[in-house]
Image 1 (tube, one colour):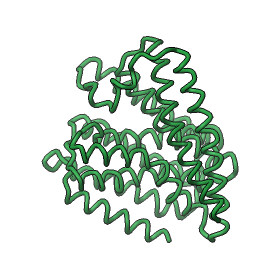
Image 2 (cartoon, helix red, strand yellow; image 1 turned 135 degrees about the vertical axis):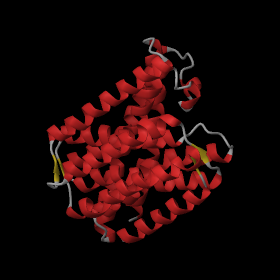
Image 3 (tube, rainbow, N blue to C red; image 1 turned 90 degrees about the vertical axis):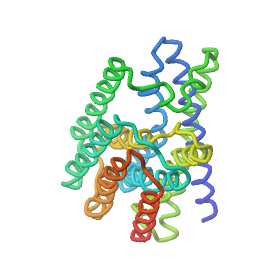
Image 4 (cartoon, rainbow, N blue to C red; image 1 turned 45 degrees about the vertical axis):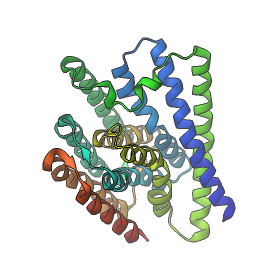
Length: 314
């Protein structure tokens, strides 16, 4: 069991570090290609930060563990809204941008509902994955075009964009990219291997392991960054960033995984976990609309419901 836990921990560390290096390298190469900071922030950075979830889901599907593949996405989305946002606003309430309510939230709800509809026959097919991914491409294109036209998105809305787009030599960027890809490859392999063995030894289902340990692990970067930002009373991490992460998880991670290999869905995922994910998404709207801020009381509700949800799984 100790070996399994060690594999999970080392796998998570490699995934987090690999994701960081991948984003650094990819952003550096994008700067050399003369892409604007806005495009880099909303595509390269967003995709890069979702890469750990993508690699874990792809690896799970490839090894015939669809429960971990879909559990990772749903568990990460629930953790982002309930755990990460809940803990963050308890420390420092978060203001909500108008565009988050107007565009990001409806897209997250649409993506969540689509995942339920596509999973209804207990299988997410390749063509359904393709629809999800195309929807992501359309949404990102729309946001970039709208932002360019209206100048709504300020650069400080994209966390750390100034640091990320500093000029670094091309060789260094390629090295960062290679280190990142290696870290993600071995990290996802070891995490899935450890999780699979641990599930067998402890007697927990792959579904529970996927939706708790694996999903929590891939949400750790968001949690750490949000807590630090809230403690410093900075709004670098916004509600919009967490919603954006959820959109990428469903449309990008679930979509691409289903394109590579159709994902089998267990009945309890359809009748319980996806409904919780949709419930948290819907619950967020009144919290954001009230005073245009997610406050501490909302944090207590989100965190309390998350604890109840996790207990219900066991």
